Length: 152
Ligand code: SME
Picture 1 (cartoon, rainbow, N blue to C red):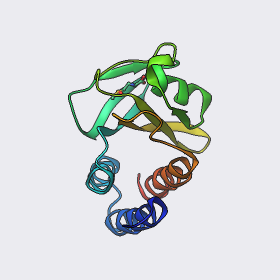
Picture 2: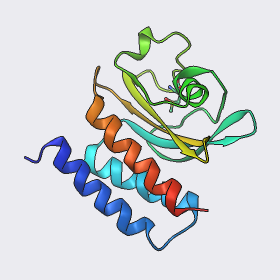
Picture 3: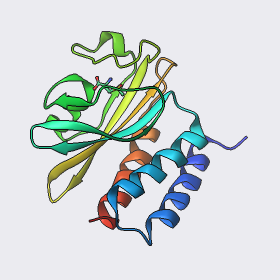
Picture 4: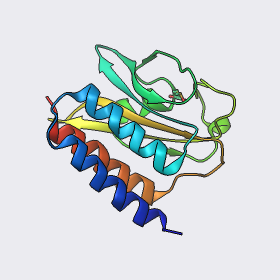
């Protein structure tokens, strides 16, 4: 069975190949989510895009999710405000966590930064506790960079 690193290397290649000839951000986010979901089978994978002072739900796969998150709110809004990736091994212990689904137990949120501004966040939820580590952070930051560097 391939290691997580091997899977992420394959994921990066797949994402680069679908993103290279497409500059539309929504299209690239949609395919990126599909690639991550089909590889890892997370509970919920999706993007929220910055629109003014809110994050608005973008392409995702998984259960219905909340549509708008204010800056500084929840894990997503905090990652946006801090401009840094947040790994939460137990979401029930994160003050202000927004529970879109009661099934979610751990989460990683990776900001997509362009010209020093957060334009979107990639949010992944798992039913397992402690699902995400620094390997996920390393590769998911590469994933959002691919989108940031190839889209309008
Ligand atoms: N749990 C997130 C909200 C988004 S859903 O998980 C899809 C948060 O606290 O920001």
